[in-house]
Structure formats: structure tokens, C-alpha cells
Image 1 (cartoon, helix red, strand yellow):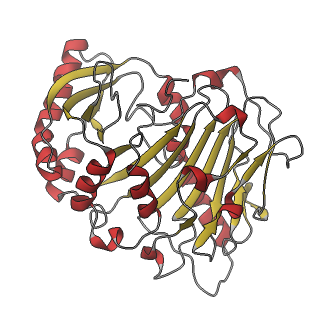
Image 2 (cartoon, helix red, strand yellow):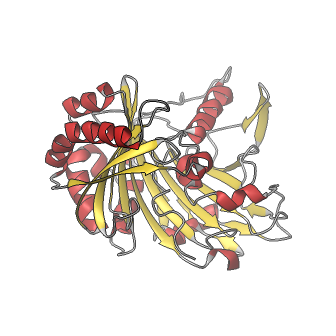
Image 3 (spheres, helix red, strand yellow):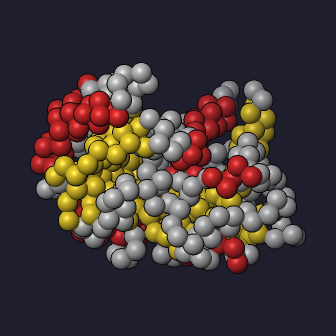
Length: 381
């Protein structure tokens, strides 16, 4: 599910191998990603999101005892807190906490799987409610039978996918603005909340009534991957677009890296990403500034990560997928980020096949390490 972070890791290693720089590049555990997903093929929607992610309990201050409880339960594959309109079938206009377990084939029927999910959920729901100041109560247990979202998002079944079982706990709906402030006030240290960057854009997005927020915990052996995501959906506009200006959908005139990174050179911790499912197979795109690339160990990577510009994933398959890297710059303007679509644009090849019909809008989220766009990523046309 962390395919793009893997790509960026390869870029980091290969781009700097055997090369000397005035200031050595570094990777931090805290990542900030802005993603614009343009679905011209299916939903006709544009979705903008900000994702803040870490594996450090110092940066996202989940109680160590709760983190250990989640990781010690080997059945749990994800814990998700969201105010999406419908977290699972049968739940409408509530906030949800989903405790997801992986159903093992051959280990009992549906009732057994539901019992196991509820046991895992009941063991941690009190701690979650107490920490976040929530009052959710058990609603139901939901078995995910459809594997399409899992395949499309490359989530490996943590959130959706055949065989995932969710213990669902609900409470009265909370606006994204209220929920964001409640969650971040206990989750984020002041060191992150006060240093601007993508956090400020996420906070701006929460003020719109149509925005939604999701916080997820994915146990990974001796650590947990934690992510907070705020998203905004713009329905029925994607197919008519001849250009995409990310800052327009992020409701910002400029995007700046967090001052959290001022202590060194962190070229891959702040990323602007665009994912386009084009309406036809001849889609082409161009940008004002493309990073020069080189090939190392059969991998195409930027030649110099100290420079700012766009890098397009040559192995993105049936979509256009690009990453804007800040290089040594600390901010980007609208003109830097604009992507133009059309016959006269530079060719970024795509080959859209019939299988794309099943892809949810969560592609962009998976690329940014997200795990929950399946909830409402493909909203009504």
C-alpha cells in the first residue's frame, strides 16, 4: 500500500549514491503530502486531500499502551476513525471507528469472523474513546466481500478487500472542522501544529462543510503507521478540464513546506502529487518545470533532488501520476504546479484499459500512503 513511499525511497537511495552535496539529504519519519485526483474516466470528480503521516509516537502522540495493544493483537490490520458519510453499508451520517481484522479462510464461518472482530474491537475501543474524547458505541460487524478496492488501491486488505471484517463503532456526526481540532489537539505536539506547512492547508479544508477527515493506524510489526487525512470533493467537473491547478482545489494561493524541516535538507518529505485517470487513451500532459532524470540500476530517478520540479512515474501504468518535489525551495506557486492536458502537451503515455472501470478514487490516497478513500472516494456522479 505504500508503493509511492517505496518509489520515493528508491529515488532517495539512487539519486544520492556516490554523489557529494553541500548539505546531505535526510529522511524524516513525518511526511506531508498534497494529492489531487482527477477522475475523468468514471466518477467525473476531482478530489483534493492533505495527508500527514508518521511512524513516530513523538510526532503523533498515541498513548504507548494503546499502540502496543493494537500491535499485540495480531488479528488487527487497521484502526480507522472517520466522519465520512457512509463508513460501511448501513451507517449514515455518523462518525465511525472501524477495527479491522483479516478473516482467515477455513477458520469458521461468518459468525465466528464477526465474533473475532468484536472481541478485538471491544478490547481497544474504550482506550480510543478516552484518548480522543469520543463516545462511540458498538453498532455492527461488517464483512467486506468485494476485493476491487483492495486491488485498485494496493492496500493489501487493511481497510477494504475480500476477507476484511470490521467491528464498527459509531457516535453522532461531528463536522470536519470540529473533529480535526479535537483530534489534532491531543494527537499532534505543538511543534507540528505551530509550524505551518501542509497542516495549515488541511485546517483550511476542514472549514468546508463537504470536507471529510480520516485518521488511521496500521500496525507494522514493532511500529505503527499513522495517518491523518483531510479531503475535499469537487463533483462533476473532471471531464471538462483542460488544465489542473492543484492550489485551486487546496484553497490556497501558495503551498509551503512545514518549518519542521528547517533543521536540514529533507527533499522527499513534502510532496505534491497529481493522479489523473484520463477520459481517453491518447491523454497527454505537460508542466512548466520537469526534473531532469537519469537511469541508475535500471530505475529512472531525478538527476538532482536539490532542484524543484515535476517527476512523472514512468511505471504508473494506466494513469498519469506525477510528483512535485520542492528541492531546495520551501514553497511553490500556482504556476509551478499547473498541469496542462491536451493534444499539444508533452506526451506522458497512458494506456487506459477496461480494468480501470473498477478503480476507486482511492488511487491517489494509496499513492500517498492512504488507506481509506474507499469509504467515499467514488462519490455519486
